[in-house]
Structures are given as C-alpha cells and as structure tokens.
Length: 152
Image 1: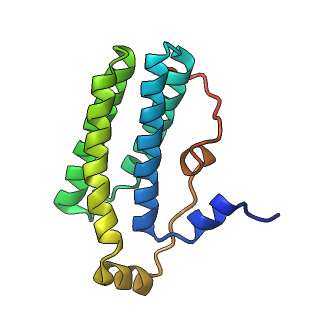
Image 2: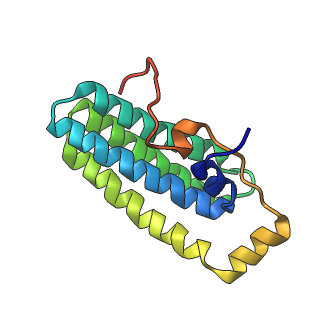
C-alpha cells in the first residue's frame, strides 16, 4: 500500500519542519473557523476549532518537560494560551479572539521556520537521525474531514 503525496511529503520532513507544517495547519483551521462564524455555520466552526485543539494537544504532548528546560515551559504556556483563545473564540463566536490566536501562531511559526533553515540545527537533526512520529491524519492532512462527538 503506497503513500499519497501528502504522506510522502510529511514522511520526508525533519521534526522542526513538521512543527512548522502543524502551525500552518492550525492557521488554516482557524481561518476556516472564522469563515464559519461569519457564515453562522456552527458545526463547521466547531469542527475547525476541534482540529486546531487536536494539533495543540499533540504539540503539548510532545514537549519534553524533563529535558526541555525553559523553552519547553514557554511553549507549554504558549500552547495553553492559544488553547484558551480558541475555546473563547468558539464559545463567544469571536473572530477577534481567533485572529489573535492566528497572529500569535504566525509569530512563533516564523521562529520555527527560521530554526528549520539553520545549518547547525539541520546537522544536529541528521546526527541524531531524528525521525518524527507520524501523526493522526486529522493533524497531518488538514483538508480531510474528521468526525467526532466533541464540540467546542
């Protein structure tokens, strides 16, 4: 059974590039949630908020609090803040809260993107042969529908 194009491109990413792709996915889902709020489409809003929260929980679960030091703590706080903005944005149908979350995600995404092109980081990744674990299709393939009973 072969991999589709997106699975192949994700499989070829290093860990930092994968984080950048997940941040891009969160941004896309939040824009879709904003469109859903503007269209008064509650199921679509909830589905896209849920997808964003799924990615946040995945990223949070991958933090190494034992070895990550202050960086891991800062990211944990960042993810918690974005999570809260998403919950509030959905609950209040507030495009402003979701736009704030997008702005914050973009800022941190740019830092990850810069790191992903740092030769020192790339060499360390190759040296450690860091292989990212595949993630659920709902996170890696943001355009595919996901069914769930959870609601935001």
